[in-house]
Length: 246
Image (tube, rainbow, N blue to C red; front, side, top):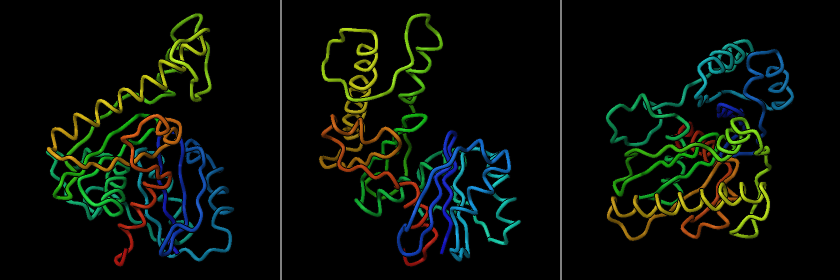
């Protein structure tokens, strides 16, 4: 049994996997800085016999804490990155690519072949592109939905903090509704436009688009270009890379 750790800026997504992902749970990444994460992990693992851990992290301090905790438990840890991702990379500086983005690309290519695009609706909205040859060739980064709405709330006197949901209209009749429309419909327009530009640059007619991340289900409802929603895409990429038989 393998422990898969996807350590993001806000949340750490943990999973237990053999030939498939058996269970998963999310925890606050900030808890790596305290003793709380060790307790979370012990309860999550329960009686599972873990022989290996795979760490995919974009938070260096949390990476160090995770490796230290794993050493204390006797679990061998490997790091998922541009050298271990078993994915071809056609990009000027591979070390600068977020490992979570490579994991997403690997999982999308494995399930949908190539070319393919992953749109991750997380703290940032990222696009990652696999070209027709099956290689990672680059991506796009935009502010995340919550980052944008939180910024509006924090930097203006009268705009509230809102909970994201699907707006029922295109014309807001109050402040919260107007903010929802600008965010949800606005991001759908952004995603549609960028997908079309990517498709044209790749010079392909068929382009699978896989959505993942916390707001994937919400946004995908209004974007017919999205082929599938895969909440566990990053973890699935880690599982594939760490299993020689896939």
